[in-house]
Length: 283
Image 1 (cartoon, one colour):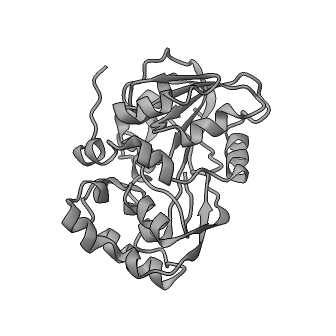
Image 2 (cartoon, one colour; image 1 turned 90 degrees about the horizontal axis):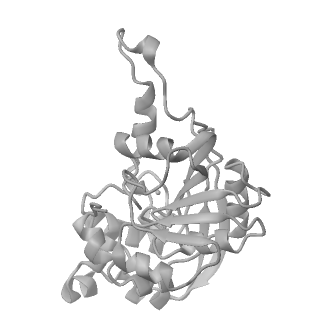
């Protein structure tokens, strides 16, 4: 199956083991809230798709649940898929594919999650993204595989230093690194660009000729929620995590050294928050 991956992601995520080591997992409170919103909490054996599963940070949490889910982890990046497969998670099938082409039968999935589709960790807001799902073809494919009335949800970790420009950083050091993040911006769409909502809102765009025929694939408005959490990170750990960002990972060594703003940081208590949506996004 052919998939299209942005060049920066293809190269930047090539070191999948480093990505897996330095990216944080998700707080269990966020996982519980998300599964409740998906209507699969306590639903034994529910079939769940983790779309853009990466190295399986979120997949692992699903596999450890008491519900014994039937999990299909779909990931387009070969190195990440290999890293995920090496974990041999119970109840997980790892497949190649992307948001516009999933090797699944129609109406065969109880819930679909797009987890950490490009962002993660210290002071942050975890929201409901990395794979390119925010386009019409992707929404149609997601709608195709979901059973009627099933739910599609997205979840991100968003540190202050990779957050949208409109978000106020919690600390001075995060504000400084955030400025570098935006200076290094490669124009690839990410959560911080705040454009992902448009594909959902576009469903209701009408003209005098289409208003009677409007039939959105997913219901609106979107539900959202944030879960805050705190953990400790030293400056070296912050830089290792920051280096897993594709736009940083592709820099040559000289550029990386210039960009390493963490050299002047003390060891810090970094506060993060996750926000899985509680989506009203029934088919």
